[in-house]
Picture 1 (cartoon, helix red, strand yellow):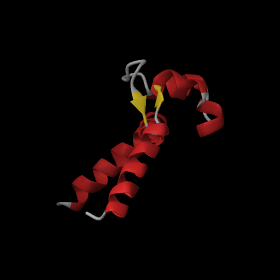
Picture 2 (cartoon, rainbow, N blue to C red):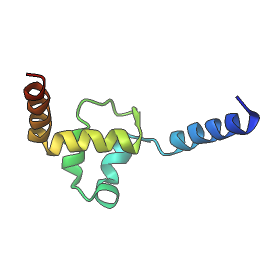
Picture 3 (cartoon, one colour):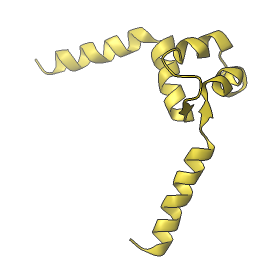
Picture 4 (spheres, helix red, strand yellow):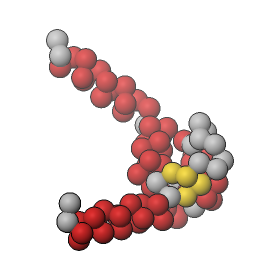
Length: 84
């Protein structure tokens, strides 16, 4: 791997670490970041420990699954039907 590519990879990793927040920080910033209520964010992150650091992508996935549980069921149903 070239030195330039290695620096870019470590910079990307460092940037993703900077974008991580704890469960409490995500709950407190629910409205400005995701335009949801704090109780919705708390529900989405119920299975996380208070000190867990989560990326914005991880939180978005958990929030989508929490707010739209039927969407996941539809996707699973489509996958089952398409293999028949």
